[in-house]
Image (cartoon, rainbow, N blue to C red; front, side, top):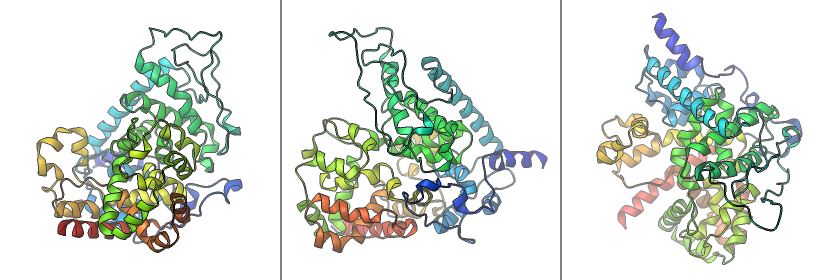
Length: 485
């Protein structure tokens, strides 16, 4: 019995948790001078609905098996209490198997922490600033592979949301371009060229929160993103990942745990950041959004098509309304031929999951609602052994598991046998937002700038739970109409 108690403490209470009795606004406090600049928080802990620390701990068996159905039901009714968000997210994102024991998870957690430290050591050997508590905001190497002697480090206390981006173009003495340094491998070179951009983004991330007044917390976010950029050889780091990673760093005290939580989120989100000259990362979601609206609201789809603007690049910059999500994502794209291009106004909302439209608390509340509704009990096994997805066909979809172990959204997909249904709940949520604005869009929108202006009204006004309910309604309507067509 003692052993089980110890495992319980390691698996639940041993992770960073604040007092469950504290007010929710105490967990993510906003700096006084920024109070008027950020959306007001709507989320409130609701006794009997919100998943509390007590209900969370009672959902575990003696040796650590988690009643995931019980947990999902609570989350979908009222979210998660801030004191336990981090540890619950680890299950929602597939870091751990609900059917594992405390001891099994403890061993896996330890292995992952050791793996992270190994990767971080590799990064530190290449760039000593990693793990030093400092952040680099200037290039450490030229595009030709020549080290820059004095890369600028951020004066973190003086950085703010409006801090200008310095001129970061490589400079060389003389009129001839330097020869590439053969000893710098391509992977290392690309990684080093990314470090200062990560730093520039980090010092602008959630700066309204008191949490980031502490320089060590900003450095922790930078370290996690730098290590991720090193291990993701295909995509590396892209602007916007900082917005997705920040909540993990805030919610999970151990840096390695925060890294793995972010890494698992990126497994479902990384496609949004995969870009080429002919496509943008969220193009598939924009195309899906277009198809959904075409089916559920043909009149609105036709109208949005008439708002199609030939000056896509200028319009997309206006849509993003945030410089760190504009430069790299708009350079050299063939905007005229983007599938779903008439829905470019949804780019930012899909890219960072409505982070900019909501307060920090409401944004992460929306995330956990969506993750709970999308939950598939086979997510852990699919991540640990990807072959189960391709080899088992329908079985990989989890029909061998009771439907109550699925989230509401995923459950409908399983019941309808829509095995090829790849649309994320966030796309249906965006469709729900458009449906809610249907009358104004049809009456007032004559161009893409009008669409953007109308949708800007949701900033600070979006109700997370209501938005998810509307998304489920749109999904049901879409499946019904698509089946008839």
